[in-house]
Image 1 (spheres, rainbow, N blue to C red):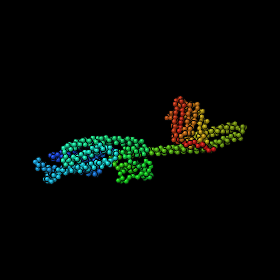
Image 2: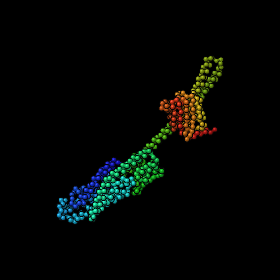
Image 3: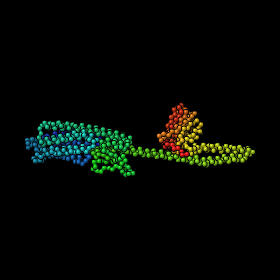
Image 4: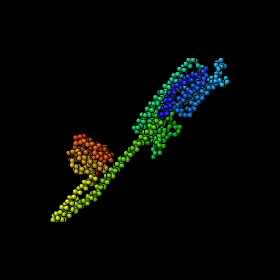
Length: 533
């Protein structure tokens, strides 16, 4: 609730007890036969008006309708006016009493009328308050009734007792009846301040429920659970929530069905949630809850936080998806460029070196062994350099992107890695083919892992195995080396993890010191497809 409302409630609670005391004293003075003092009239009028305000303004601290304001104003007029006129018209000296210093109206008819008229007006005002309080109780929601009941129930009792008590002044009743009425009044007046305290405690509990609601909605529950949480917080099982969809220019409920906002005078109220003037959601609830706008506003704020949190999470997820897609496109573009460079080297420079080697061999053959020894030595050296350059170029092309991976598949490509490794490697890979991005990620991950084993592990054997299960390809690279590999140190394992992340893969490293190293790469993948023969 708003802080100003809380301050009003504290003020009303503090004022409850003295107001009831003032009504008690004022009522006794006004009902007596002799104490004709302006202070007594003001006391009773002020106390009655303040008590009326207190009853109608609880628990918000405000009079929220013109009818309530009119009733409070009418209370001041009908309670104070007739008593003031009685003070100005009553002349006790005619009956042998003391002079009335305030006697201004010398009319026996008016004086006689004022003997009973103030109490008749009291009955009218009291009956009006009873009607207002009962109507408010009937319109209130279950949650609001729990807050109102400790105050309104003793208030209704007090008002009815005062109606009967005012009637007994006009109509004579036995003294025993008046004693019972006086005792009942004291009990009702004592119950009202206690009711205020109980009502405020229940309101505090309702605020705690709102705090729990904020925590629950912070976990971004499903829309149906969100509606249930809001309904429980407001005590309105008929509550519904509509979420604004800009594309459809309409609200939709948790089931995805289009939702129309209720019309006026339908008994349903709508609390709209907006963000910078744009609609976010709408809470459709019992119009009785409008009697406690602070509670509705608190629940609406909690829902706004939940909707905003959900929107932000959706934006973050969208950005993450965009980052993943961008990273995958970058890796795919890199692989495509690798293939192009490998193809250009194979079809261009590599073929030229092959032609050069053949030309040198042909020239050496044509010259024969009788040619100049220096020339023959130069040709032999040139031929050897050409062969070495061709071998290095082929190794370079294989490192950029192995042609065997594209043409034959992952198994053959990993076998070629094993053949070139200085460490003994066993390979267990199935026959199927995977997506090019997946095969490329596995190949380069295994290549980096074997390079790390050769450099740091001091291993005698490495096992490479792939297993596809539950839409995931798992690659195991296990060695019997010294262990102690730390993914946080060096760039090798970090680069390997980054490469796998580009295809939504993950890397797990198990490397106890002296116990070898196990690399587990998990890559989401469709089932392997056997290459058609």
